[in-house]
Image 1: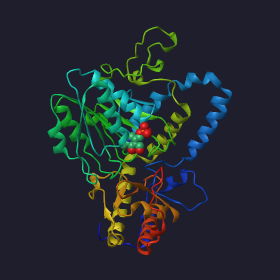
Image 2: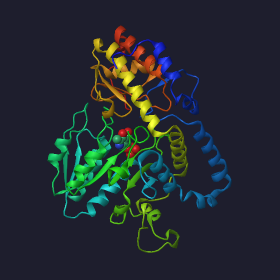
Image 3: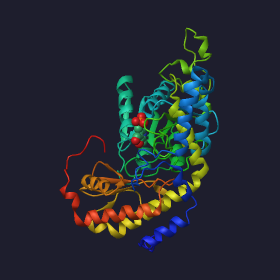
Image 4: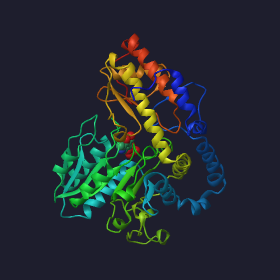
Length: 420
Ligand SMILES: Cc1ncc(COP(=O)(O)O)c(C=O)c1O
């Protein structure tokens, strides 16, 4: 990598040879010449989604009214199958679009605990995303079970030996993120799933930072359960519904704790007693969010058209290029790579440590480059493959080195804002 040129012409050449370059124009962009490296937090708006939602609102809702439910009612599992087929390696009937990632985690972990009364320990790691850790803490407190939290290096990701040492016959579920939200460290799903299953526990993967960025092979890995959001790489918009995956042969033995009518057999019989449908729809709760679900469908179709393997190849090319420019330009200014250096161990974002990362991230936004800040002292840059150019990476790093050199960020307030 160190042999790569650092001039902008080279970035232009990479863009000229990029088979996904044309997808950049499939997104809505304002007039502002913004360099957006935060699609791993909130993805861009696909033009097709804007058009499809306008049509849905005017036609299916505006004119079709309640009659449209005949079509809408099947969407959560249809769109789930689309995600399963194109992005996360799941055969039909195992993925459902519903609720939020947080709620889906609660549903699946609770169900998995109930299904294994002899096992009372949950495992996660101290670098898992906060909502995952909090939901597990809450379940442990409510159900009088133990949460065993293993230590993970914030920059390098999960340590499989540490995990192996925490497993045992008392463990019910191991809940981990495939790509770490802070560093982008990519866990070996196949190996870790095998390890956990050997111990007799179930494994749940949080795919928020991996779905749409790296090929996920849930079925091939033998994963039991997964959850993920759709507002990052799937570009479905703020608060769009999440998805959940439950392996087909596990579905029957799991019963989730929110007994809503959308999971009920013969729903419109309006029967007295809760009796969940067989299949993935038993993990549904209440009325699905249709506008958001349609946005998930559009976002998934766009990624499917690009192809997850090509997206992964470009993600590696963009992030390794970013790391290369960072090595060349930024190290003298106190930056250090806070993501795995090996391509195979990294998702699609890169994190840089700097002791003044907060103010630098603000100065960068003022200079037209949007990334984000993550504690402690880290600047997170997500060049999402579908819409980022190599020139964007070059320009972003060029502005970053100017800010670092002229120290203009030192004039900014140190107080951290509510949303970072
Ligand atoms: C790994 C991970 N899990 C969960 C979430 C958030 O869950 P929710 O969509 O319920 O807020 C995020 C959000 O960034 C995340 O990165």
